[in-house]
Image (cartoon, rainbow, N blue to C red; front, side, top):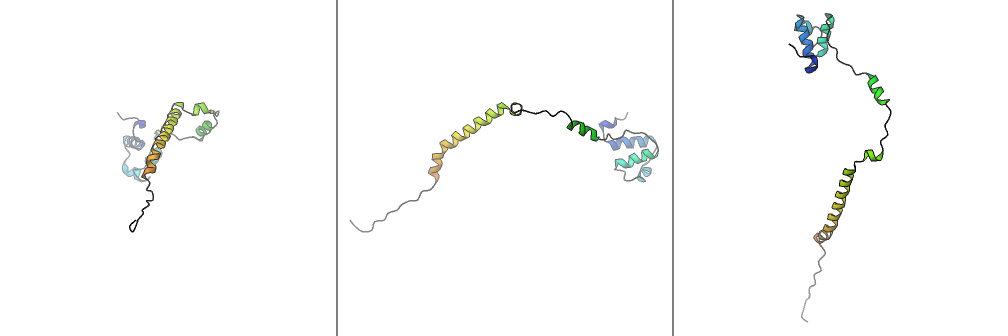
Length: 122
């Protein structure tokens, strides 16, 4: 028993239909490359054989989706307060960490050194 066209490649299903009706690869080559789905569709059409056509996307689907009632989203639906709290606490923690490390970072900066040389005796 063959699998329905939904569970496998469409071209394989078209080939199975053609082979079941005793159509050959040579007959299909007259309509184009054997690796193209359109070749096998044309072969089946020329012999008036029925097959499942590829579902086409209609422009109406897109039009109805855009014509739906637009739902306005407010601030409280848009913001996840758990994430907002986490982000705020992380920002405060980073600020505190940087402020505690600031004096240590200043010690890493080299300062000009004054050297005094005294020549002679007192």
